[in-house]
Length: 180
Ligand code: ADP
Image (tube, rainbow, N blue to C red):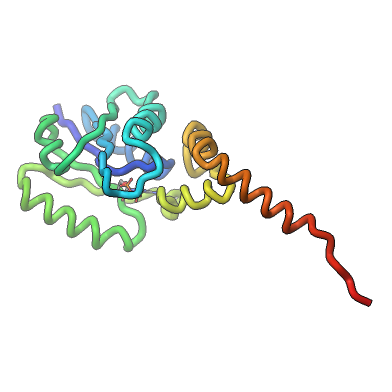
């Protein structure tokens, strides 16, 4: 039985991530989505929230499970007795970083194979940081994140969005002053 681990921050999980996890789950017997508990990173959702959002996104795929991990990803992969690490690649911007990380992880754990899946073209521009920025400004995220993630983002940013709407409303509703 071949077990693969798909690690990441998933803050929050997007349709780009779910595309990769669906495709990877078809290649291996079991896929573990590993949510990195990285306290020093400036994350919007807590690790429990990120695990919950990812679990809901993967609930219909029987051979996928979700759990959090701390520390080195290669240690986690050994701990769960997996053989493969999955990474997703967007445009060339991801390549250098993923290549360096792959070489580092390979020198730490030569027994773990790293498999990179290319993004699907329609998800190529999706990254969690941009998703959060659009959500913060009240933009529509249909087709970019699952519905429950969109709701979770709306809830997180509700106060902020109300404030932005108030300011935009004031800006656009101000009657134009005309001079003769
Ligand atoms: P990010 O903030 O870049 O989404 P993550 O740590 O959550 O970062 O990403 C986990 C993995 O998923 C990484 O290998 C990343 O390159 C990949 N990934 C993220 N978004 C996409 C996407 N839209 N298409 C393909 N792979 C992606």
